[in-house]
Image (cartoon, rainbow, N blue to C red; front, side):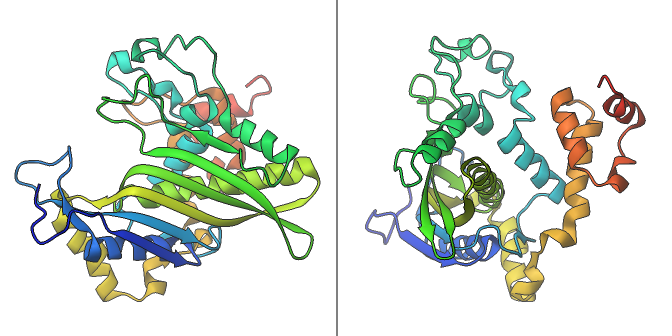
Length: 326
């Protein structure tokens, strides 16, 4: 490990701001400037060490616009598909570790946590049955808004240690406190073991802050009180920029910072809605070589599409969804 000129301590970086893209951008930039050089288990021999730090991001208004940053290195369609994956489990059917497929998804661990002895039990399940941890969070908060016990975990000690790709997200915690004007505020914290700052963190934040919105809406509806999303605190033990893509990072993220104002580096959701809906269309129409999502998912996604986009759904799929017995 290359740590010349360093005392061996991992820097701790705190970033606070109003919106998601503002905070993510500053966290990535400061990790690039202040992060320690550290090797990772994914490095190539020719790769320089990563830039690494423990990072705490405080997003004061996580649902406020603008909500999207132009520099996250994936398409808007992929972002919407990822959101659907985390919140609704559209790819949970891909879990099949014995067939060299996915070992888990965040949605499965959060909404259907099932303690298994090893991954050979992934399809048959464990002895206790699946637990919807997110629903239990909601139930805890409905019973007592200010409880400190509303949390969900992903780590499974029986299978994750030694696995080649264990979960990065570790824990979600939430608490509701009163605010002025007969409002109640749902605060959320998330804790991450390890995080690709440039290529993963923005998509993670985008999906999990939407989960915060969904939880606030459900608690509001069931309690009869006005509950709104509050600040979002995101804690990463290892927030890193991999050496293997430094050149891409310089030509993409850093170049955009130099050439454009902040307003030119972000999007409002309404300005790119058509691309997000295109992600839904990909899920409905399917992609070559990928299994179709379930009919129940297709029904839900189809209902979310504006009428103009429904015309772009493959005809056989649309007929199936619009039939009375779909």
